[in-house]
Amino acid sequence: MDGYLRRKTFDILARWGSLAMVLVALVPLIAVLGYLVMKGAGGLSWAFFTQLPKPVGEVGGGMANALTGSAILVGLACLIGLPVGILGGIYLAEFGDNAFGKVVRFCADVMSGVPSIAVGIFVYGLVVLSMRRFSALAGAIALAILMQPIVMRTTEELLRLVPMTLREAGLALGLPKWRVILGVVLRTGASGIATGIMLAIARVAGETAPLLFTAFGSRFISLKLDQPMGSLPVQIYTYAVSPYEDWHRQAWAAALVLVGLVLALNLLARVLTRQPGQGR
Amino acid sequence: MNLSRNPDATPAEASASRGGGNLGDQLFRILTAVFAGLTVLVLAAMALQMLRTSAASLKAFGWGFLTSRDWDPVLDAYGALPYIFGTLASSLIALAIALPVALGTAIYLAELAPLWVRRPLGILVELLAAIPSVIYGLWGIFVMSPWLRETIQPFFQKTLGWTPFFSGVPRGFGMMAGCLVLAIMILPTIASVSRDVLLAVPNTIREGALALGATRWEMVRKAVLPCAKSGILGAVILGLGRALGETMAVTMVIGNRADISWSMFGPGHSLASVIANEYAEASGDLHLSALTELGLILFGVTLLLNIVARILIWRVSRGPAGARN
Image (cartoon, chains in turn blue, brown):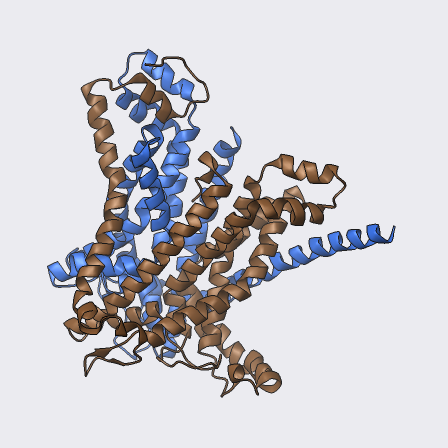
């Protein structure tokens, strides 16, 4: 009986101990989000969203340049990264049970663990050095490279969930396979792929390191893709390490906007994946 | 050609059994294959590109680059030792801090928690991974560092100040801040990969242990964990790889001075943070080349760690279950 009591005690200890670890893990989440709201909410104003930064040291101004810059960079990254990712995912799901598919899958998984700053170095050598200047295009390419493996792998997973019978029905109607894939399989998996895209956007929207020496930064709103361009994460970084009180305030406000966006995309994606995932 | 229809066949198997098909199909197959192959191409191109840019530095310094402490753009003398030291020290300490918390979290979420809390708690832990690095950096500068300087570091100074690890003046920014912020950032990676690995262990193993009269914890420790061992090791290596390459948050709190010191209070530097600080303003070709060589070291090491980790994880969750993102 004594041994039983000891075992039971260990069991209870382990349950509560591991629960305690979960709570410890969540402390930073709460601390970060709490401080973001506390310090960031005060900095949000009409001017923050609509005005350009004031010259160094002057109080006031906003982050309109960084907001539009981020939108353009992420948009352009999607334009490059999404088609490549989705088509690659189609290959892996529909044709990829061979050695080549295995290699691609492995490389994609490994890519997601490569430091994003290494991607920045790569794009610097590839684009910035040959164009001889920092450019929005270089930044977008760096983001697209980070995005592509995520989109490819989620597309593959989601397309594999589409039942074989749908493919067979399409083929039985005499459609060539590529029409079946584009018209039936892709359409059935579309909502799932959309959530994958949202997660990928959420991931790259906050990337800073690969933009530092590709898109660099700019204090103006510019639509020229061959010129440096500002972005929200880079501006948060520059403002946070600057010595100016007012810039710190704006960095917190920008951080609140960025995290709000990223977490909203994440939560939305998770809520959306719930139904198709459970349906099988 | 085998035409028997197997309802469990994957789409790819089914298409293989149907053979080549018409021209449109073949073109489509080739087109998608090209896009899939781009991933491999990018990875190879990254390695080549970095090798090419760092060629000048590789030639000028050879292996001595790894052991030299100089970093002087004016004299064009470069060595990586302080950065390698800072990266390794901060990552390993961060791993030691994060590991127990992450494993406890994974075990709770996969094995011990009541079913209804698993999903919401799991989402919260994953949200921790979704917060961008620069945000942790911002929080680290304005919240964590002052807290370390005023509360935590004086405590360590008073109790353990006689050891070399906690000597010196508490300043907030430095190794300790870098380690802590890294620990926070790799925690969700290790926790969620370990949880997925645990979930991949077949239920029959759990049932077997419970049927023999094991308690829930004994089942985890004696039946489930041994099965998941190599996968969890993979998760840990994945976390280590993430810590080594983490850039922004570390750059913002670690102090950015190329010192090699045992004190947790002192400022440090890391491979990624020196690249982030100097790459855009590299003063000459050799400077740029040396910085790229730092990047190459980082790239090579994380690549290797990731390959090992993926193989370990695949061994536990073999087959299509190995496809996680």
